[in-house]
Amino acid sequence: GKPRVAIVYGGKSAEYEVSLQTAYSVINAINKEKYEVIPVHITNAGRWLEGKPVAGHLEYKEQLLLDENRVATSSNEWLTPSTITSAKSKPDVVFPLLHGPNGEDGTVQGLFELLDVAYVGSGVSGSAVAMDKVLMKDIFKAHNIPQVTYMSVTKYEWHQDQHGVMDAIHSAIGFPCFVKPANLGSSIGISKSNHADDLMKSMKLAFLYDEKVVIEAAVDAREIEMGVIGNDAIEVSVAGEIIADSSFYDYEAKYKDGHTSLIIPAKLAEKTLTEVQTLAMKAFKALNCSGLSRVDCFVRKSDQKVFVNEVNTMPGFTPHSMFPLLWKNTGLEYSALIDRLIRLGIERHQERS
Ligand code: ADP
Ligand code: MG
Ligand code: MG
Image (cartoon, rainbow, N blue to C red; front, side, top):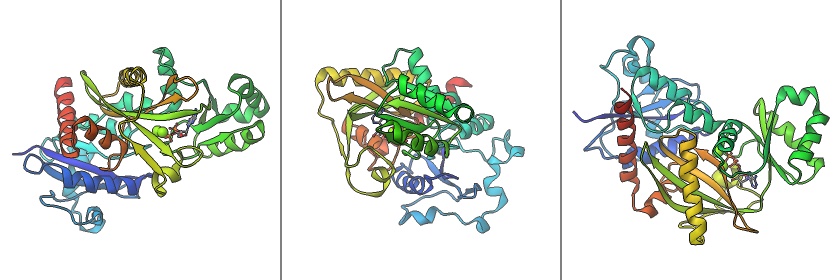
């Protein structure tokens, strides 16, 4: 029969709603002549619920809120430890539409590895490293990938000697600087410190979310993003620019209001475009990514110098998100992009087994 694609969405995360919206779009766009589409809803409480295959068009996203009470235990059999080795109820490939911790940080990818099932996107190491801003930056450094000056501080170090840490930030980074929890996304817990006076507040805020924070020099820069897809042979999309109508591209700007515009393709000098695209592919490879990633760069306004900001291994994926729009502008429509990513996931699994 047709390959069975499990679309996994929801999750115990701040991005639950976004994930549901994405799943709705993906399930409607996926070629159902070619694939059997199985929705797998991870509830806010963390329960995995598998639904019946979706054959037609969904009218609204709430149809994906599978009801705990209606689901027979047999329907999510492939996820229970006793059936890890049974090929019977396993999907052929999983498309995890999950963002942030437990979704794009290698944990769910590890589960799929144990289940020996193909999945879309980066493996355990790529996902884990890209989710941890400190590990990510340390790897960029090892690969001579240009980035802003940064340092990291653990909560333990902070509590040992707050004044020592503040002094170190002062001399190594200076102001203005950005303070970020190492392991989140969506700008949560991130703040900008313009002066030494703000720093204490920024540090405390970031430590609410993580045991480790990264402090980096702020640059006055344009925000340029690209999509990268592929496994061994990779391709980069056109570049897009984010213009946020707030002091920085924060959570509100990302999800709440309509004040952010995406300019695709970004207006860049030929030389700068080549530079960011080369850098995007280099960053993708350095982090051992596969399948897809969105690579976010800064282009400093004063001198056009380029820096990599971060790699997102499961970027926003609604039809209105940057990643699909970048590919649309590169000649790959939403449905074709989904198909391509599924095939890349299957290929990667076949190559490794
Ligand atoms: P997240 O993973 O949550 O998206 P980012 O590191 O991308 O976190 O930071 C969120 C936003 O904060 C960026 O899109 C940018 O607007 C701003 N920002 C982050 N770091 C810097 C920096 N060093 N200089 C200038 N702006 C920054
Ligand atoms: Mg991010
Ligand atoms: Mg970002």
